[in-house]
Image 1 (cartoon, rainbow, N blue to C red):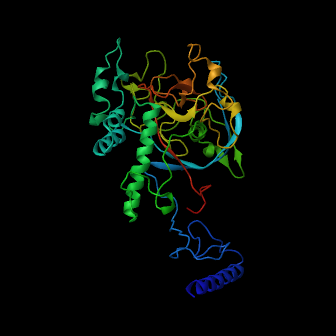
Image 2 (cartoon, one colour):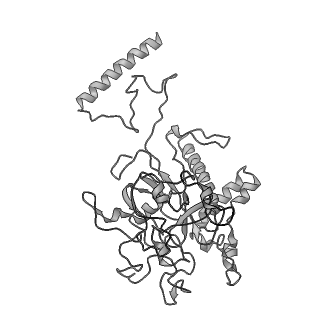
Length: 403
């Protein structure tokens, strides 16, 4: 009798729902945030004792330090003259879905926080040790950089400088830890039970975030160019950019900062910051992550300071092999490792080669152009490479969509 009444009630409510929609002229369509009390295709009620459970969802929670990157059609590829003759990033039209990205590079303070919580967890000693950056990346036989070896990571004055000496593998581990740590906190705040075995909080709970991860090369390049700042009215763009800012120069043409460099890079051989009293970029090595103006997406240091790891495996012909929607190379499909003769030392390319982009404090201006690309082994690190995290945008397309 109870089940019969439930079916009758469900049918009546479904009919009522149709009537309401008709009276509203179709304005009451269901959404992720407002799925209604029952299924629109079966008429069965949600959240009954033996029914399908649909949790409350108020939209994708705010991810700390992240900004929304509205996706769209773009032209990826190097807008700079190919002076290296690499021919590995030719121009092509693609579409990139909306996503989120850290507004700054991950800093020394962020990494020390990570090391602290891993140390407090039940992680193995091997994994705890694996979180240590390689501070010896600063060492040089012919330079006195020992102070950075000893101080750069831990001295409070360097807290908001980008962490370096971190491999692609370590950066990926950080993303996994950050996902679990942030989602545990969000779940606890909402009263959702947190797994005691270290497992993930169910995505179906509706209170957690999608996974943090490294940005794909296409996402990184799209976000760096920030062509949203050149768009007006009906999909019109006034120009393409060579750097994350307008113009073909690397100096600020406006206001009190006129003449100052717009990024932290090496101007020429032996010139890392200019002359005392009027330093051209105010940083001999790295700079604080907020030291320069953000681009039109609100992202800091998408050119210079440190290069940044991308998710992609490196291949010279990635520009022609990948899809034109959310392009990404995650394997050697259609461009196998055996083509490169890595084992015989005739190539530096293998399946552990990962892309990095952006230019650094030690690079010349050529590498500041987002279209340029380089690669390094995923288990290697330097004093010139850091990273930032990205995340998918679930159910949000543009700036005006309901969150």
